[in-house]
Image (cartoon, rainbow, N blue to C red; front, side):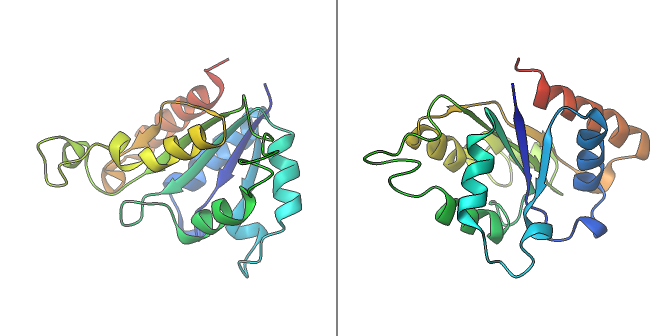
Length: 174
């Protein structure tokens, strides 16, 4: 299965978690890693290029740090312009049917913050449900999310272990 991981971190050079995940993915040699902010620093997205990338892969993982209970803005814009009517949905829009979509999210808040009841009174699955609905809208299967909470407390050894788990998660659905 061809897997594409779309990285939506505004500055990977300052990242600890997402950068480690990217490094582990690249070292695996089994996935295509595509960093949106590196590819499109001005925010101008080459829609045709992005659609070709999606067409070439069977599984797409959206990787990002959680920002105000959502994704960074470039990923939202990417979804808006790349998943066009007539290509991804609507009449003739079948390009993504039978493919898989998943998310990989890192967040500063702790696991207990995302429990019901808890400070946010919502789970990460609930808060990332718009991605599941998007998958369903364009005919994709939605995969379980990969979540790392409490990123400010992750040790170097813990991050190494988590990165290996992430790679297994991304590849483990086969």
